[in-house]
Length: 270
Image (tube, rainbow, N blue to C red):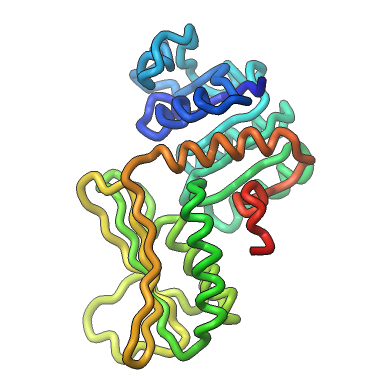
């Protein structure tokens, strides 16, 4: 049995991760933690996750429980994630990271830590369907080429802290790669005022934040007289959590280094 430490276990995502880990035949929640000021400290993680009493109190910080697990699942905040990665490297514990908002420098730092000390799956979205979407967008962009404008619209709940979503950015990167472009150069994240005619190279990514929307992404390929739309809509958090559980079972069997959900799902050559 693989022992899993869940970060941010008192939050909505953390609770669903605990539930999906417990459902996986190879995994079990062995420890859980929150930031030291959380009201969830001391609560039984099973009780707050709807699993019944597991006898596992939520601890204050990763250091308190790092010796109790084989892999850490983290969907928290980018600054906290980097701190957890440093601890994981010190103790040589595998990680599954679904945190969004990681900057390029943070990803590179994470890569260096993983290459030296532990295996890590890092992806902006762990859902199986979304990772298939990434590949579909890449293939579609490659076939349609420059004759079609690419636009991405993403919608999430009003509490989400980063924009655009990591998933939307990844979709943009997949399309840009297939078209021989650099999203850093051609990405347009907002439009306002007299913006002029759209350029042929730009890839637009627009954001909606409202209510309790779990996560919706639509990629538009718009050409002369026709439009293709590829969409994914999440109605709950279980698909993200279930993918994280799959990744946790997989990553503990790997060598040190950085991996993605494409590796976990064998989609790298799709």
